Amino acid sequence: MKLGAYVTFQGGTWQVAAVAGASVTLVDENGQTASVLASFLIADPAFTVVGSPAAGVQPWGLLESVPARERERALAWQRHIREIETGLPDGPGSSGLPRPEYDPQHQSMAEREQAKADELTQLGWPRVSRATVRRMRARYHDQGLWGLIPRRKPSSATGQADERVVAAVLEAMRRQRGRSTGTLKGLRELAGQILADTHGPGVVAVPPPSTFNRLARVLADPLEHPGRPARTTTAPVRPFTPTVALRPGELVQIDTTRLDVMAIGEGGKPLRPELTIALEIATRSVVAAVLREEGTKAVDAALLLAEMAVPHPVRPGWGEQLRLAHAAVPYYRLLTLDARLEQAAARPVVVPETIVIDRGAIFVSTAFLAACETLGVSVQPAPPRSPAAKGAVARTFGSINTLFAQHVAGYTGSHVLARGERVEDEARFTVAQLQELLDEWITACWQHRPHDGLRHPLLPKKALAPNEMWGALLGACGYVPWPLTGADYLELLPVRFHPVTGRGIRINHRTYDHTLLNEHRGRPSPDGAGGKWEVHLNPHDVRQIYIRLPDSQLHEIPWIHRDHVHAPMGETAWRHIRAALDRRGDREKHEVALAEAADQVLRRARPPARPRRTRRSNRPPRAGGRRGRPADSG
Image 1 (spheres, helix red, strand yellow):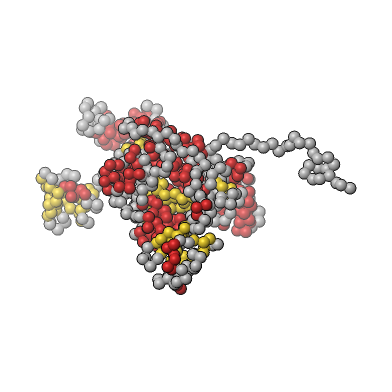
Image 2: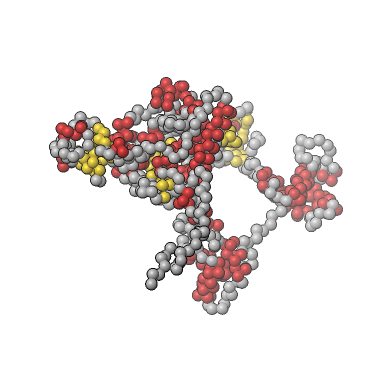
C-alpha cells in the first residue's frame, strides 16, 4: 500500500494521501478525509488494494501431493519468471548482476520474454514460445507457485460408459434404497428393465457383468454399497460428535443388555442375566452395575441412582489395595468432607446431574422418573435411531464382555458361531455370586485400567485411568457429599398396599409378621388408599418388607421363614483374595498389586473344566433287546 494507491474501505473507494506511523489518511471521491489506524484499515473485511491481487497464503501443503518432477518444473519456472521481471533469478533484493538479455534497464518486457523463450527452447524444453512465457507469468501472478503446476482435465469416474446406462444404474439404486440389499446380479437385471422401459427393448445394451459390476461400485454410495447391509434411513448421515462432560456427574449414561455369561438361576437352570450399568462420561467410570436374572425392573434403575451417589463399601475378603485410601485421589481431604469414605472401595462417588436413557419401559416408568425428580436428577431421553447418543455405554458393554466375561466360567461368546458346544454345563455361579465377582472386577481392574477416551489436551499420548481422571477433576470441581441414608433406599423401593390381618401381611403366599403389627391387626390405615397399609418390597430380596406405620416411618417386617433362608446373602462359590497387601507409598508397587489382584479375580472366575463325558458306554447291552429297553417277555 503506497501513497496515491486506491483502496476499498467500508464500502467506498479511497485514495491513500498520507502514512504517518500507524495512522493512514484517506481521501474519498468527494474530497472528504479520514484518518484511521493501519491495523483497523487492513482488518476491514472489504479491504482491498485496487489493481493488486488479494494477499493470501499459497496452498503449500498441496505441493506435497504433486509428483516431484512437476514440482521441480514449477520451481524452475518461478526462477525464470523472476529473472524476466527483475533480471535476477532469486527476485528483488538478491545479489548479483542481471544478464544483458534480461536487464530491465536496457531490454523491454517483450524482448526479455522472447529471450527466455529462446533460452528454454535451446535447453530442450518442448513447445516454449513467447506466448507460453506470457501465459505462465499471468498464472504465476494470479495463483502463485501453484499456478505453475500443469493442470489436467479430471477424468470421469464412469470412464466411457454410456450416459443412458449410468442413468439407469442410478435409478435402479434409487429404487433399492431403504430396502433389503440384494446382489449385483439382481441390480443388473433391474437396470436392464429400466433401459427397456425408457428406450425400448434392445435399443441400449446392458454392459457385461464384469463391466456392470465396476460401474455399480463406482456409482454406489459407500453406505449403500451393493452386497452390504441396507441402510434403515435415507436421510444424510450426520457428522459424529463426541459426548463431552467436564465435571464428575455432569452426564451419566444408563443402559441394559444381556451379559455373555451363563449363570444359574433361582430355579436351578442356566440363563443369561441382564446387566444394567451407569457410566459416568467425564471419568468413564462404571459407578453402578446391577445383574438380574431377567426382566430388569424400574426399581433396579432407581436403585442405581442411590448406588452411584454413595460410597461403595469394601466387601469382606477384598484386598487392602482395593480401598479408596490407596487410590490416586486426595483421600485424606475427602475424608474430612465425608466420613463414609473411610470404608469405601476405590470407585468414584458422583452425584448425577443429567442421565441419558433410551426409551425402554423401565427407564420411562413412573417409578424411575419419580426417583429422579425426588433426587433432583434431569432425565434426557436419547433421540430415536441415534446410536451415537449412548455410544460410550454401548462400547463399555463390549469392553466388559471382552475383559471380564470371557474369563468367567459359562462364557457364551459374542454370537452364536463363537459359542461352545455345552456352555450351559460350564455355568458355576448364581446371579448373586456373579454380581459379587463383577463388583470386585470393576474395582480392581476397570477403575485402574487406562482408558483411550481419557486424555488431556496437553498430554495427548498419555491415557488416564478412570480413578486418575476422577482425582484430577476433584481438584477442579470439588466434592460435595450426598447425605443419602438407608431410609432413602427404602423410599426408592416399589410401593404396594395390603391389609394387616390377624396372621400378618400376606404377599404371594408368603406371610410377614412381627410384634410391631399387634396394635394394627384388622385396623384400617389412616393414610392408605382403601384403608390398606403402605408396604415397600424389594423384588430381589423378599425376605422382609417395610411398612409405614402411623409414626410416618418405614419399619422392617420379616418373613416368618427368614431364618431358614440364606440366599442371596449366602457364601459365594469362589474364594476371595486371602492375603491383603500392606499399604505402600510406592505407586509402581501399588500398580503391580492391583494388576495381580485383577489377574487373580479372573483366574478364579473360570475353574478347571470338568472332564467331558464319553458318549459310548462300556457296559454290554441288555440281553434280548436294545440298550435301555427291557427284552420282550413273550
